[in-house]
Every structure is written in structure tokens, then in C-alpha cells.
Amino acid sequence: MSGSLAYHSGLAAEDSVASFYQRSGHAITAKRWRSAAGEIDLIARKDDNVIFIEVKKSKTHDQAALSLRPNQISRIYNSAAMFLEGEPLGQNTDARFDVALVDATGAISILENAICA
Image (tube, rainbow, N blue to C red; front, side, top):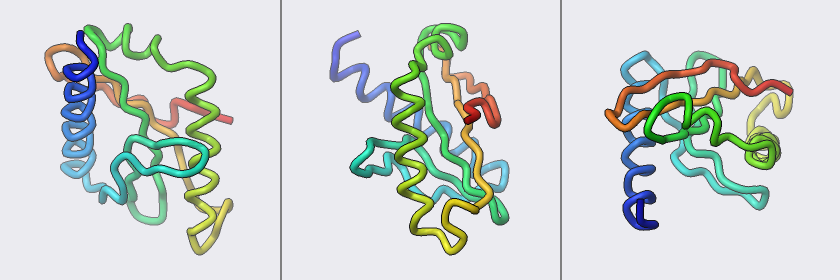
């Protein structure tokens, strides 16, 4: 897949995942939130919880899951810590880290709390 096609395919996957979360009662707080530590694909809220979402797209859900690397997990944690600095409860905010897998057909599989410290 060419760079431009992969980029746009990734954006479309993020938009689909955002819609999926919204339909299940979550508010999308940010898309492609950037900090000095890196980027978080999506940030959602439901009740008092903040959900950091990494979107991975590939031919299959298994391939998408295998594409999540330790350096990406570290980037997500560091970026999330920076985001939580702006929350009223700071690092004590209820938060979880989900991974959303999107396959070539556009099917979405959510792994809630998939990334744990």
C-alpha cells in the first residue's frame, strides 16, 4: 500500500472507530491528539473515565494486533500522562487504554484495557 493510501486508510479507520465509540455512548474528546511525547489516535470519555485508543488497521485483526510495538505503547503512556496533567484529578483520573483493530473489510474489534502498565 502506498504511503498516501495507507495514511488515508488509517484516517478512515480512526473515523470509523470514533463513530463506533460514539454510538456506544462515548464522547470523543480528541482525534490525533499530539504532545511532545507523541500522538494518541483517539481520546474518548464516558462518565468520569478517559479512554485512550490506539487504532491499528491491517488485512486482518490478527495482523493489526501484531503491529502494535513496545515503543508505541511507551509513546501512548507518555502522551497519556501529559494529557492527564490537564485533568482536574491529574494522574488519579480513571483511565484505560483500548486498542481498536480494523480489518480490510472495515470490521472493528475493540480490545478494552488492552494496554496495561
